[in-house]
Length: 157
Image (cartoon, rainbow, N blue to C red; front, side, top):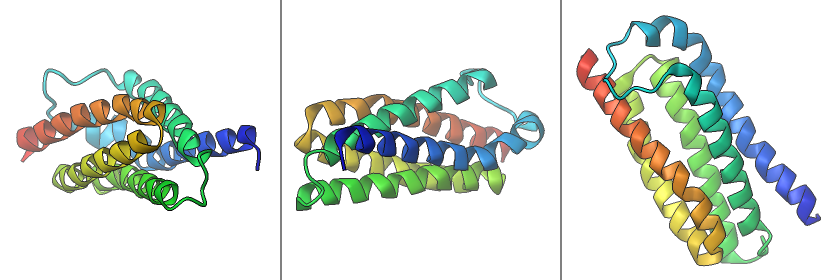
């Protein structure tokens, strides 16, 4: 498989994770989420889609940079498996928080997700500094999302 195809596959897989998550998120925004008490630092709803779209793109490029180092290498395989696991957890957060309408459930999942991102990012840095660096905006955004999730839980329990 050529590098161009790997790059496209990597980006498409990540963007698809975002699309799957949005299936659970989008219906809840104007209803359940709108009715929640939210902290003052909550961004406007319109910001989330472009932020996540950009992050999924960056994640896809990061995954490609690791994948092109050789999927036959155990270090690369492990990093990509961790990457896929954190993508599943990312979708799981949307299911837990928005799908189940459960800020506490979302809080548990997002904390596990944060750890998974950190471990993945560290593995990526060992294989490609650029790939690890491309994961930094993602962990920063998820750190912010974690604070937002915790605040929503506290304000609405």
